Amino acid sequence: MKKTHILGIIIIAVAIGAILTTLNSTSTYASFREASEAPDNEFHVVGKLDKSKEAVYDPKTDANVFSFYMIDNAGTEKKVILHKSKPQDFERSEQIVLIGKAEGDEFHASEILMKCPSKYNDGKPQASN
Picture (spheres, rainbow, N blue to C red):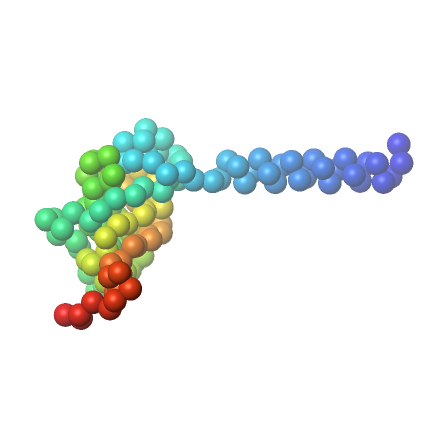
């Protein structure tokens, strides 16, 4: 075999390995129940903040821990521990997407995405409070 053929085979093998690694590390949308069934995998969980329960953030103790309760789209409530500081306007969010893993009765999130209420209603600005 020529050196170029061997080099081509090596490049193809590395590319296949990279693709398989990428596919294994991708996360999917799930409910808290599905995330609890596969604690080693990372999931995106969509839901709403449970405003009837207290959200705890004490930057003096640990500025990178924020806990709150969320109800997923399937209606399951779970305590969430976000390993970051509390996001600005968190209480005003309409919908939350958590990225993380289930650990026991808690969901440990590494990232959070929030959908906040729009400032506009049918193209007209709303009166600010």
